[in-house]
Image 1 (cartoon, rainbow, N blue to C red):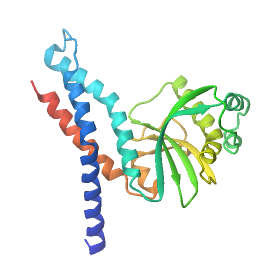
Image 2 (tube, rainbow, N blue to C red):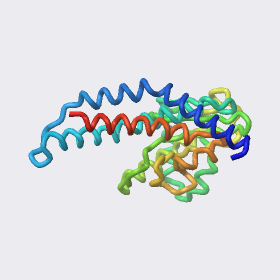
Image 3 (spheres, rainbow, N blue to C red):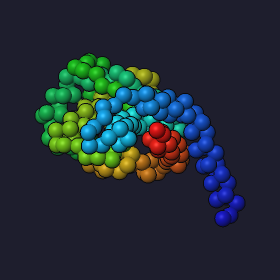
Length: 235
């Protein structure tokens, strides 16, 4: 391994360790809640396996929140990017009407609508403005290790399109000079429930953002997994 590669590997390991250290309180708090969770003993599973099933099923649900926190925290270290969460993104009545009237996806993705009027609100797990490229993207972060039924897929797609229609105006209202915008989904473990041009997998994060993300997030996942397994083995 040459000097440059050794230095890159060293920096990557350091970045990963720093991220684990920052997220350790969140991971540990999640594990404490899992340890305190009450469960009903199943006649077939018995106490041991009923407890393990209860813990692991809850862990799957809570892991999505940890993934979101890890990705947001890691990307916030990139000086080129401005990263935040939007808890109350306003979806307008007009955006719903447009999605119902325009069937061609390519046409829909070329349209922009004014942001402000509210038919309902949704949270955006992550919003990223690239200061150099002047791009503003929103991201719905999912584990992506299971499939959705047709109804849920339609719901995800509709929210994506409605968000896309309003995203440029939203960014401009915040004072950003937005040239292009996109609403995307991160399916971290790669089972994608929407077309490829509307989503990315976890191992595509580095290329997508032009910044090392995946290794650091995986280090947080490893810490959570190891502690979770130790918890399950406890009696």
